[in-house]
Image 1 (cartoon, rainbow, N blue to C red):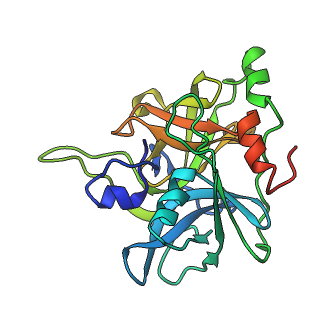
Image 2: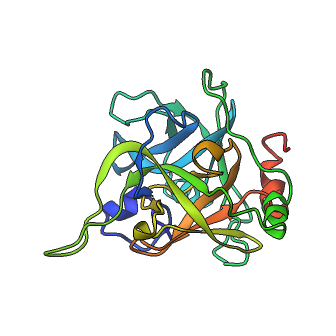
Image 3: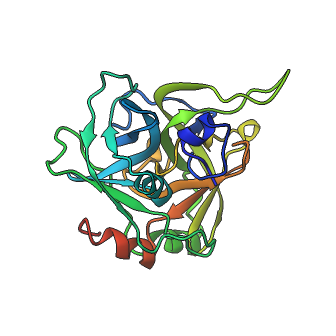
Length: 259
C-alpha cells in the first residue's frame, strides 16, 4: 500500500500511505486540503505524515492506516492547511477516530478515519461528500470517466532514477494533479496515473488525501474517494477508497450530516 512519509524516510518500510506525481504546486487552489503532522521521527519535531480534507468545520477526513499507526505508537496528531509546511505553520490539535472496521482485506478494508477538532476551523470552506451510490450511478450511465479526477496532497513526487536506487523528491508543498478513470469496483476507485499518457497521480505522503470528482473547469467540490494505495513506484495506478458506499457512509455518518 502507499506509505506515509515516515515509511519512505525509513527506507520505504512495508506499511501504507501516499504524494502527487506529474502535477504542480496547488498554491491556494484547495485550501480545505491539509496534512497530518506528527512527532514520528524525532521527539519534539512535527513532520508531515499523511494528507486529508476538511469535510465540516470540525471534521478532517483521512485514511485509517494513518491514524491507526499513530494510535498504535502512542503519538498525537495535528493538522495543517498551509500551502507549504514549515516549523512555523499554524497547526490544529485534534482527536483521531480510526474506523473500527479497518482491515487489510481487498474487498472492503474500511480504510477511512477522521480527526475531530474541539473548535471549528474558520475561514476554510469544507469539501463535499458524494451522495449514496453516486459513483456507481455515473459508471452505469457511462459518464464517470468523462471529466477526470483531481488528486491533492503533500509529499514526494515521481521517482528519479539513474546511478543508484530511485529517489523521490520532496518539498513540503501541497500539490495537485489530474488522473483518468481506470476502473470502479465495489470498494475502490482505480485511476490511471501514467505520466507519459498525460496523467498525474499520487505517491508516498498522500494517503487520506482527496480525489475530487472532475478536473479543470469541470472539477467539483465532491470527494469521490480518498487515496490509499497504488504501485510501488508511483507510476501506474492510484487506488482510492470510495466514499459513496454503504460502509464508508456508515462510518462518516457518525461525524457529519451525509448528503
